[in-house]
Length: 261
Image 1 (tube, helix red, strand yellow):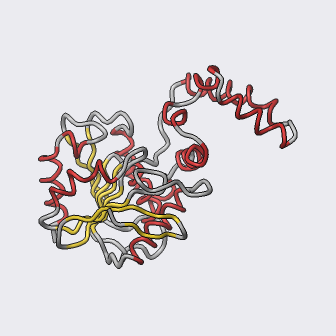
Image 2: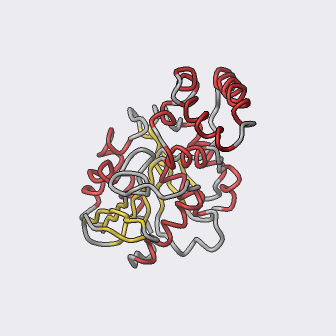
C-alpha cells in the first residue's frame, strides 16, 4: 500500500486499474477497504485512487482536530502532488460532505470530471424532541465544570465523559471516538452545508439507497434542490451502502453517467 507525506502525516492509499483517474472518497469510520470492491468494477475504464482519509484506515489522525475545509484542502493537495488531473469523483457519505464543501469554492469547475455522491452527508438532519432534550441535559451537566480553573477543568471533564450518564447522552459514533477524532467529529458534523449548494456549478449525480437511514433520502432531495445542476437517482432495496448492497445496479448507473458526453 503506497504512502504519501502530507505535512508530516503519512497518508496510505490504494491504486487499481487503468484509464481516466477516478478519485474515490470513503465515508466516516470507513476506509479504502470498503471502496475496493467498487474500484474493482471500474478498474477496466478508470485508474482508481482511494486514500485512507486522515484518521481512518491505515492513515493516522492529524495532530489537531480537522474541519471539513481541512479535509477539502487535503484532497486538493493530494491531487496536485500525485498529479491527478481532472479526475472523475465517487464520494460516499463523509466523502460527499468533503466534495460539497470543495465544489462550492470559487473556480473549482475545472478541477474535476464527472462527480457522483452517494449517501452524501452535510445536510441538517431532522431531529426528534428526545435529541434536543439530551442536548439540553448534557449542557446543563457540563456547565459547572466549565467554570473550573483549566488545571481542574480538563481532568474533571475527562472523568465526566467516562460516566454512564454522559455515555447515555452521547451518540454512538461520538462515544466510539477519542481525542482528536472525537473533536474532529464534532467539528465536521456540526457544520451544515445547505448554504454551499447554490454556489456549486458542477453537474453532480446523487445516487441514494431508498432505505438509507444514516443519510435519509430527504437529505438527497435537499441536495438535489439546492444544486443547480444535480440529479437524484434512487436505488431500490438499498441503504447507506448502496454500492455494496446493489453493486450491479449501482455500476450500471454510474458507468452511464461517467461515459456520457
